[in-house]
Amino acid sequence: MADVLGLYNYWVVIVLMMTGFYIVVARDNLIKKVIGLSIFQTSVFLLFITVGKVDGGTAPILAEGFEIYSNPLPGVLILTAIVVGVATTAVALGLVVRINEEYGTIEEGEIHVQDVEA
Amino acid sequence: MKRQSIPRVAAKLLIPYILLYALYVQWHGDYGPGGGFQAGVIFAAGVILHAIVFDLRASQRALSPRIVQLLIPLGLLLYIGVGVVTMLKGGTFLNYSVLQHDPVHGQHLGILLVELGVGTTVAGVMISIFYAFGETVRS
Amino acid sequence: MATAVRIARLRGLFSAAIVAGIYSLLGACWMSVLDQPDVAFTEASVGAGISTVLILVTLSLTTSEEKEPEHTPLLPLIVILITGAALVYGTIDMPRLGDPDAQVHRHVAPRYIDESPHEVAVPNLVTAVLASYRGYDTLGETAVIFTAGIGVLILLGGARRRRWVADEDDE
Image 1 (cartoon, chains in turn yellow, red, blue):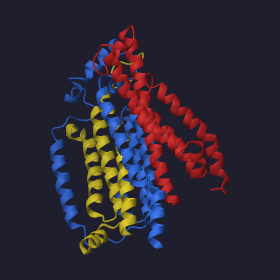
Image 2 (image 1 turned 90 degrees about the vertical axis):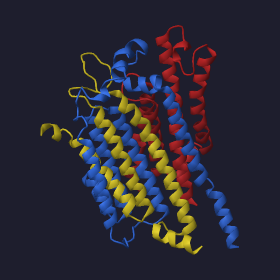
Image 3 (image 1 turned 180 degrees about the vertical axis):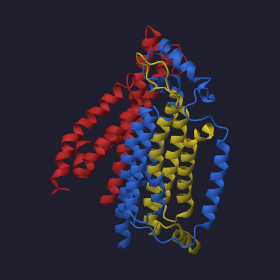
Image 4 (image 1 turned 30 degrees about the vertical axis):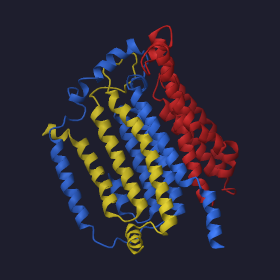
């Protein structure tokens, strides 16, 4: 039972991931979808970071008096991923702005209707 | 926000420290948390704060969009340049050990330059993105 | 978790953007508790700062309210419940939080931690790995950021030109 409870971090991440996923799939508004995608992304970052933690460890910066360090590798991967994530979110938002200019709306259903009519 | 003096005063106090902190984080990435990516976004956050509180035009007068757009490829070129220099000096691409007389110093120099390249490109991209969005709002 | 669910239910998009910023900030707090301060303050300034600003700017350029959903979200709910259950099932075999014997701490990480004082002599291990051991990957990531920036500039940079075109069309 103690082993299962130790997995709570994965479950929290899964809940966050599913929430983000739900927003992307179930909501029609494009900006809401982008926000959902961003939530999904952050939950994945959290997944990686929780994997890197070591009991009794400290931040992976070598210092006097500390023996056990948490794993630096997940941090490295996520660091770049965060900045790349905001850059791609910016591209997505740019697309939303242009879509709004062309179609006059950012609700997916209405855009689809206009595409079908055209 | 011309009539609201509290954000203006607070921003005037904070922005220099934010930019300074960004530079601190950039150069001290070796010894504490930090490095290029963090420094780039913190610097961009400072500039964005300035653009929000004071007008976008004031920010663009202070930091021209052309210069910022120029910074984007410069950072990447610096990074690649370091790699090319290491190849010219006889090592493999991005093997910093050959940059100096002593491998450890070579690593330090390589890391410093590479992080500078990363920080420049990241700051340039973030600020340019904000300028592009901001100009769309204006038009 | 509460913030994420709140966002799904909020109709007002400005509020959703702010709550998303709070979500990022809480995530950053959790990350710093998990011994990754670099990542924590990057996530804080990017997620709670820049990302929120960009969403708000986009909102000012488009609508500010979300329309009523037309169909009941039953199918998406079923999909996420099944996916979530499958993922939870997958985590049963994973190592528990903080386990020092986990696979992920075995192969490369101890080498980086042990060897980097001799090879790189930089106290911040994350920077040492990012810029030196995995410097090639970081180059690629920087190129991706560069490309994304160019993408946004292409999409939105022609603001003035589009205004002229729109004026010509009106005449």
